[in-house]
Length: 193
Image: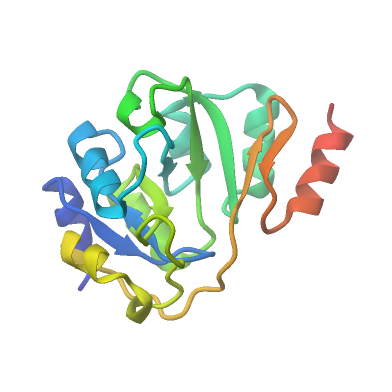
């Protein structure tokens, strides 16, 4: 399937599997509460656990979040990359995505196919393409049958590196989950209190 097919699926309220710089992700239109609900259902995920938002650039992220100078500087330093940056959401971001919380995690994966997809289809949900509690998919052949059945398009980018993004609230200087680049991120946060 092509990028055109994937973008059309998102525009039609459908779901797409796409590769990232960590594992395969599951995308629905992040600004459409119904599409977000389909992502939760496909994953079997508790609605109280927020989903992140994938976009194609820091500038695209700034259209949907309120970022302080420090948060924007952090994003420009580490994105694209295996980092989820938690920022205050704007009104365009539905509560369904964030579990009613005021902040949303933003991902700009360092993966060419993902960036091309996100540039045309984003913002989309940025969550792993697996049933909750099961292993992450690093190849399309690893996808759970329930995920395959739920999506309209699978973008195959070959094997992904695996691992997790580091989840960080740069404004508060807090790392919520240590993943790739966590030591470098921690150093940046300490140098810029």
